[in-house]
Amino acid sequence: MQRTRIDYSIYANIQNEFGVCGWILTILSYILIFFTLPISACMCIKVVQEYERAVIFRLGRLMPGGARGPGIFFIVPCIDTYRKVDLRVLSFEVPPQEILSKDSVTVAVDAVVYFRISNATISVTNVEDAARSTKLLAQTTLRNILGTKTLAEMLSDREAISHQMQITLDDATEPWGVKVERVEVKDVRLPVQLQRAMAAEAEAAREARAKVIVAEGEQKASRALKEAAEVIAQSPSALQLRYLQTLNSIR
Image (cartoon, rainbow, N blue to C red; front, side, top):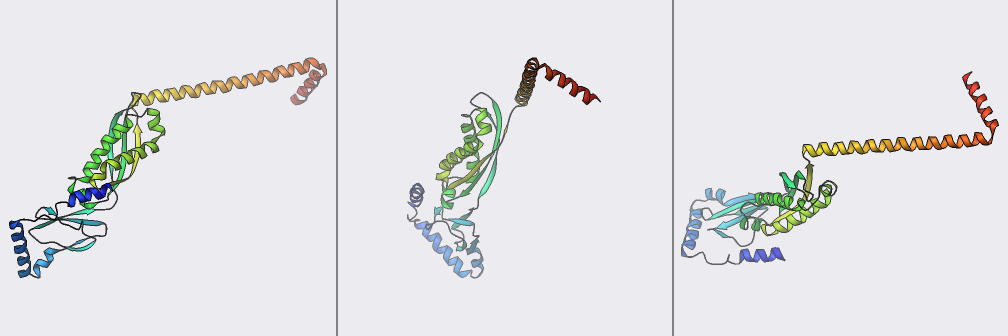
């Protein structure tokens, strides 16, 4: 519904008269085309591919009927201009952004955005360069969203952050005729000093776990020795049997 209202706003003034000068130029252009046939046909006939659309302006006004294509369409030289719009999914990389996380850690984050033009007419009339505008908006959106996250959330919740960014970008670019299909957070890079500190912390944690394992082993061994001593104290013959087993193993 929103895109329909946008279309109506674009086409609201299309049916206005060109004025006397406009009609004179139009008639003269058709006369010129007639007298220069078939040479003029090469300038009037244009082709757009299956994945393209052509937005036509006549004397600066948007032609009714929306974007043309795919296939053949006609223009009137001298008074018509047109712009081709690619409807395929395009992508761009968001340059690494220096972001201060919620817990005051500075990280460098980059991402990839996949988008396509959903309305060729709006993408031409409502914004100068839809792709460039989307890229700039993606940079600010990435900083704004990650600025509300802690470092742990950035490292563990990339999928949720990417989805949130995709929804935010898609809503913001809708008036430009752009559909954001997907956003992927590529990498979260930490400062070198923080990497060293985290590596030292991980090493200390590993050493602590190793010491706990050794202490648990010693505790189990001492319990086994205590149980053996209790058995020997209760049965002196068990000590003699153990002595004989030891002599036998020495031989």
